Amino acid sequence: MTVNLLDFDLDGLAAFCDRLGEKRFRATQLFRWIHQRGVSQFDGMTDIAKSLREKLGSVACVKAPAVLVQNISSDGTVKWLFDVGGGDAVESVFIPEESRGTLCISSQVGCLIGCRFCSTGHQGFSRNLTVGEIIGQLWFAEHFLRQHQGTHERVISNVVFMGMGEPLLNYESVVCALRVMLDDHAYGLSRRRVTVSTSGLIPVIDQLGQDLPVALAVSLHASNDILRDELVPVNRKYPIAELMQACRRYLLVAPRDFITFEYCMLNGVNDSPEHALELVQVVLQAAGTTTWCKFNLIPFNPFPASGLTRSPSEKVLQFLKILSDAGIVTTIRKTRGDDIDAACGQLAGDVRDRTDVHKRIARRRTIMVKSESVATLPGRREGVSG
Ligand code: SAH
Ligand code: SF4
Image (cartoon, rainbow, N blue to C red; front, side, top):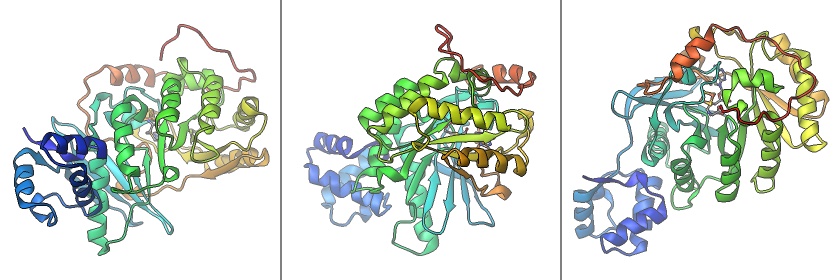
């Protein structure tokens, strides 16, 4: 059985080299060849002794998941469907902008959280991705894009865990992949430019703050617990007020001085002026100010099974104005890659569901989500699990 070197951070690779009787600086050399130069054949690693290259050839490999489909949008967005074996596939999206290039990557095949408005959630869950499968998405995309654009310069400046899956439910592998992304001998990305997006698993947010604080985005999508319980079921375990306090704690160690809240605008569900006013109260109650977070309003990307529709742009603008007037920096996410289904929440991949999540959602799908405008926030409901 060969070992995939994409599964290692630098310490892991050094331990592997040690087992082969090689010094740590060999690991650094190897790491640079793999991640900075995109070389996967040991023969091409010319400053490594021939004997070691031969040894590596027999025990190790550098293997990213194979590309099943590649789509390039008219706006330059690129989407890849990667084969991760056993009938499972995950997606990554590259979004070029003037001053940066962002790669949106997946952390799991499917997702257990089961949000109402998310096509990944509707597909159920198969398994966690390995470190090599997570970092392999970046390794492949970065070196493919460099070749495609005829450059030796870095193309991907930002990485966001906003593809398929809940990254904080695959914690160990995600943190190991983060270490590779941040390592100067690999991609050298700044902590501020790597964003973990989560549905709000409070204990793991705290853990990430201790282990490796990178930029944090929290998928809020509702202004009160009754509504959020419906939309993001994990809220039943980790309600809004407690989630806000976890975000405040994270800020003490975060590389940025704000938390981003993602808010998917669902027509007639969570998009009224009352919801916006209620959100302002949630933010104020948590900290006494509105300057510690930003809101990113995401136009809902519909898919047939959701039974939901996108809020009209007038409503989104009205919502934005209420938040902005209260002093909250608010943006509307530009929809990119529409023509190749590469927008948020459309990343479906292929999931061999090993759980009953999709059945549970299918049952809930028939229940219409009511628009709520509850002024007071219920406290924590003990003993309810998500
Ligand atoms: N599981 C993590 C990260 C992946 S989802 C999380 O939930 O944060 C990335 C973002 O896409 C989340 O904010 C999610 O709520 C949003 N999203 C999911 N489905 C969507 C849809 N159909 N339209 C728009 N945004 C969606
Ligand atoms: Fe999972 Fe995030 Fe989709 Fe919710 S929005 S089902 S947490 S991937």
